[in-house]
Length: 182
Image (cartoon, rainbow, N blue to C red):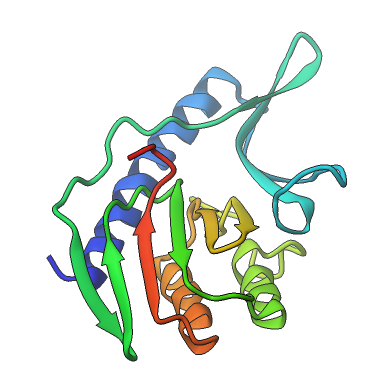
């Protein structure tokens, strides 16, 4: 399987499960809402303190957040590829738990901010009222040498756009995996 097909399949598998999850939650709680964006407090580690929860419903007069725990994920042997002279190694790809390990000493802040603005869409500029999903990432956490992303219902293009940001910043190696301990 080539990397583009792998990314598309991982995204489609997750979104299929997400749509079924959201529909089931909506049947159980008709006033509930999928993909709700929250602005968290300053102690949060998520990028710009924004986080998108999978589903929110009322329980005992209070909001209850429900997160999808996907039952299925792709399994595959590691894939090594290149993009613009950058080595890409795919060890695992769970769309809601992607960890990109890179060799950059510093991330390009403006490019990351622009990517986040596009794919998290904090101002709902791309929001489509009757769309099945929001087509947004759910979270981004940056740390030295890595980025953790819940790609949520964003298109596969969001993944490739973020890799382009890292490659343009000079990353020689990017390892794609998840947060599961090795």
